[in-house]
Image 1 (cartoon, rainbow, N blue to C red):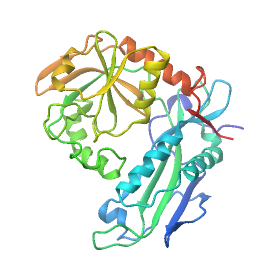
Image 2 (cartoon, rainbow, N blue to C red):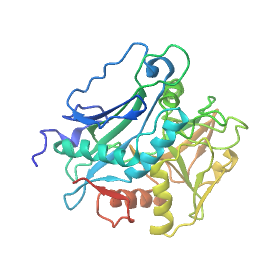
Image 3 (cartoon, rainbow, N blue to C red):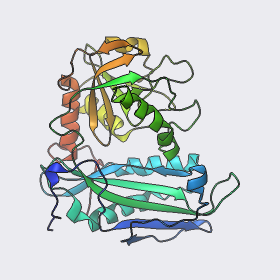
Image 4 (spheres, one colour):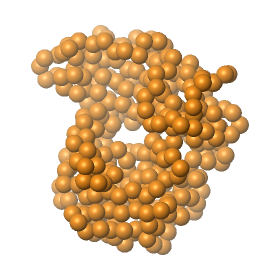
Length: 341
């Protein structure tokens, strides 16, 4: 298939409209059969549930061209599972997991010309999302919904290599205990916008959120999970009921243990022990791992031994191994790679 005439090497992480997207409507208690459409615009009532009461959730995953020329996605079943959990928590009808996977397949296949070639560093970002679409005035769940999937080619998150970032300990709370921090709800990201823009204005790249109950334990950032490496090479990730279950983090933990033979701990991480770690990274779909070089706690600096020039050695191995699996250079665990046919 002939690819679109796109400057793959200079793509940013921005929206580019592609040819097709998928939509299915929920009405009278059931989802319709769904279809691929060309129109990228959404027309809904001014009183739609999503506009009035933020009843929406979404997912994010990528399609890749592998070393042998196949187009694949990475563990989309976990995205389907997580979106089901998000929908249930927001009193939305879950979109069936098998149909989620098929919708992703249809969208990627229909836009195959937009999947960047192997070696370009670019990927096809896929965004499934769902929202309340009918008019509501009282505070209540919508009766009608739309499930949609669109995609857009994006460049590498880090151009010229990943440089460690500087983050701050935020005074804001990301999620309340027993709230919605564990699901991928749009409202979680809306409330993080002020905090991240405030961090940027203060010269920081991201926020570290602590647990809102005691403000002694590390939770996550606005859009990524933390991963730490101890001085004796153990991989540690925070455990909390209000942390989003990142597909990337779960995959990195498996890679650390099964591929690299590292000891792994998923546990509560107290902020006062962060100064003793050797490496730190933020993991998520967009960047896989963003290395952290410095954490600033109200003027007090925690500088990791790996410095501000490059990823630490363990984080680099994790990054190289997982991206190698995604790109087909390293054999994947069974069920991780979903080929688009």
